[in-house]
Image (cartoon, rainbow, N blue to C red; front, side):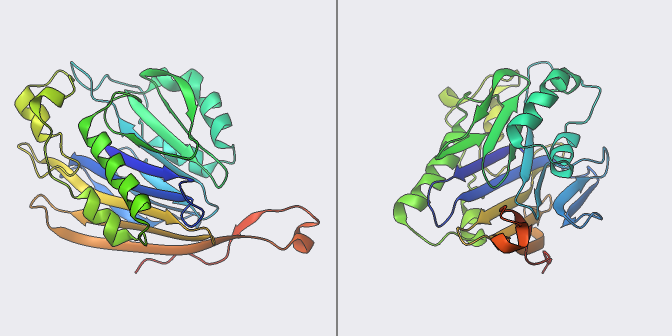
Length: 278
């Protein structure tokens, strides 16, 4: 992902709302969002390296990674950043423990921001900034700079997300996709310094990036809405180099606690319906 905005515990009705844009070269081999063979993970797949940029689990876990754009190039790493979300989703460690366990190997990857969460918490970290951060009841946003770098597209995305809760509207995939399609570019004075010319930086400053010279732009918008009643809606809308919608995928599933009698007095969560692509 290259822009991700998350509203975490902003209301009992919508404890988690996530919207993200994936910016990538259009010729990079990709499989769109689908149910993975293990039957418990929904994600797209990078067919070049085998990982994913964003995925959700039927158990309520979710993860996403963004690249950090740096002067002088991508900062070669020996491992693919796309394996990080997949590794978390395939495991059982809570978010904070997963990031702490992985931290000693962060230098094996090029620059990234990693977000991991479950039904109870959300944490994020970067190998280009210190610390592991816990999200409270707040809206967080990350793009191609480390946490706290204040990119204009991040600020704009957070403002748009906050407005939904202020207005008290029903939050759905179409509404979030519309917001993430914003193509307004930032003023030159607001641009981050990542080592590329201002003209190019300006073209990349909008939330949704139209196809650029060299065949780069926003390839998909992903949305996850988890309601207070346990219903989860995950969707992905894909675009070609002309900015046209090519595919849309929708997955609905519910996460609800088992009756206490079924768990010997211990609460748990299980998927109550298999996700389905429509």
